[in-house]
Length: 455
Image (tube, rainbow, N blue to C red; front, side):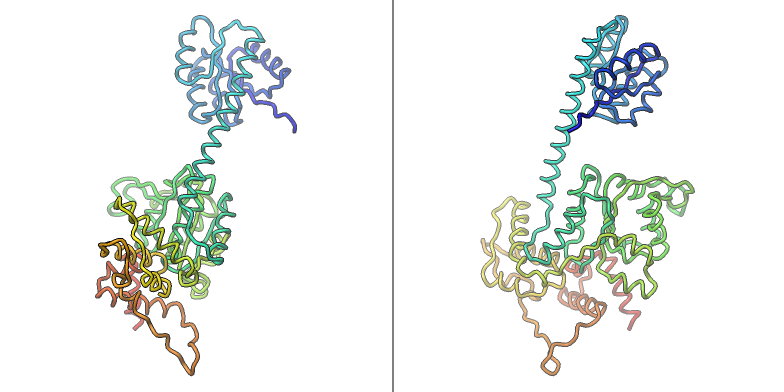
């Protein structure tokens, strides 16, 4: 393996000393970057040196300033300060502030080289330790956040997520409400190199157009009634991290245009502003709608769809992965027990059978809600079928036509029927129905209004 030369940034306002040190250090195997002022040295930090050698006394921008900026931008890079007798006390104070070492002028070549090679070794070890700790933390976090399941169709989706997580590709997760799209999005974030930064999420179907644009892109003071101060949008807040856009199919066309601009130009323009703000955000979007059908109806932009659909992941419904129901149920019961600081409750045979036979139109979220209700209503150690919601234990006959099952109805009809059924099961309580459906109450009210307009 070819030996990599350590990169050293030499900073001194004495040009002759910089030239002398450059010759010496190149001969000893260093790649040299030089600067004749503290200000120039700070600019050369973009060249990512492995060690910085700086004179402590320079006009305007001193070696202490270079030390501070280096520790801020390149925390693993050691800084060695050169100092005359008059500034020795300042050098010692700088070591206390994070400088690796100081060398007092005049110094011998051997003395300087010994210190610099120690600094190189220290920087490499520090960087390796930081990388190792980050990887251990990433693995721990991803293990805790890894979605649960063993069914083949679910594992296929999980494998795609794990494969693309380390990339910068935009991901579109498709699946019914309650299948765990945000859980998978968080898992992708935890497995990515962005996991030290923010994971932020927003439900695009839960807010009116004007408020959604303000939340996503921010706004400037006075841009609309009520904008009494500047507001930072989620794209800026999630900079260097991941932004999860749930129910992206509910965006109105005007907001779709602004989102497309962000994806193409990597910049946002706050509402009411004229100057763009550069952003570095990975987008993971999700939808329970058929976006291609929306494109045909003219309610979703084709160009935005292809920008979002770089990597497509389809999450199966819970009824398509029934073998995972016992695993998920056990996990939820353990989580509930931790919150209550109690022993986890078990499932009786009849309760488990009812869970496995039910179709779960609300998917994993509905299963979680049903079990949370059952735990609250169970005094003993085992949950029985009689404390499960009646919709879970009632056997629903499947209608037959001429001895055959009917063709699958359109998704919109299934969605409406399910929503109306849940509303009846919850006695007309829209807030509770929204919880069971796994959607925001505002989304439920909007869907109900649409149903009324269609009648």
